[in-house]
Image (tube, rainbow, N blue to C red; front, side):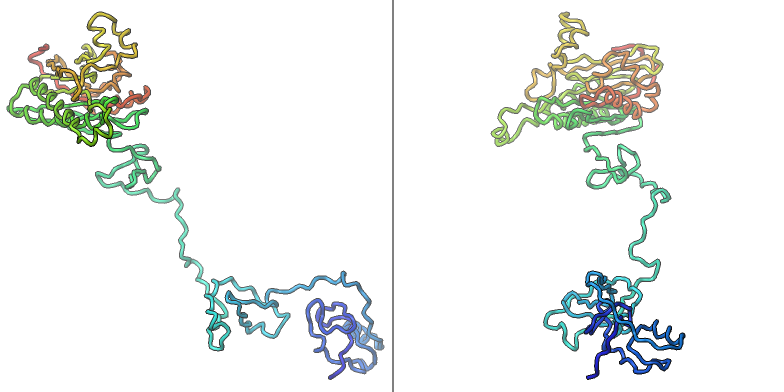
Length: 473
């Protein structure tokens, strides 16, 4: 074995060395690979091994010199060795060594350009790891070309084209009036929860319209309405509007109002084309509605066993028929009908009288109207449709107005906020006869703006002017 040359500094990084070092403590250079010091320096002089700078200086000066001896230094002054990532061995996810890169194998100080991180390699099964025929990892992983990323950037909503107009019949949001409603009942545009079907209802025919709303305080809508048109035997049209208000203190009031409105409407559509007088037809319709509500009380015996203290379903009813220049109204309970002339020159008139405690006090002369309706018992009804009602007394009346106008058929959810006839006249839009649906919407909005303490339902029935036969019957 050849004798190890004694060097004072590492030929690779010029780090000071100590006697007996086999490797450089800074860069790890193999000191045994250094050729032995020649007896004669390249310029012809002899001496010990020295630094490359000393050899070059001596060659320039033309003189020989002994190579300097490395000074003794404390180990704490030696900097911590630094390593490049390519200098350190690595393992794959199964614990096996990674293959060496061809361009760096065997070159401890070689540096390579960093490679973009690739997806982790699939784990190697324990029984095949390290076997000679095991598949080797690829040297490099291909990267996608610029502009071919899988996820396309999201479009800027400020520059995106507006959604196309939805097809006819598409249910739109009641809040923003533009977003479509998804199957879960929420707007796809603003996220607003949509009302249930009974919470807000609107319907419009050529000559009548109605709107019903849950209001702002109730958890459900217990009102119901039905509007329709029929032809009299002479071919002239008849317009029907029925409005019902479920009694909240009764069982299933929403079912009662719906059953009553449907039964009364169907009866009128059956009797009017047969030539029945509209006032008689209205009387029969109220009786049919009462039968429909009474039928709801015929529950199975098991239902009564589970809820023995429940009372029978109940509701109020008010209806209007406009036919052949005649205006007919019928009612039971405290829902009302108002006559509002188009020109506002004639008087606005309330066409119904409430079946209520307050109305009885006024009729008996015990209180004036202001005092009666200020009492907490004012809205306690004395007449209704239901199996536990007192003797049923349907009220009907017919009128022949001498001018054009509209009939406002409504529940107390509206007239509580426009009780006086002057207040109702002010609340009804001037173009109500031409835009009945808009007018019904405005009146419902009037109640909601006033507080919306109850369900509110309004039907607006235009009454065309018929010159002959003015007066009332």
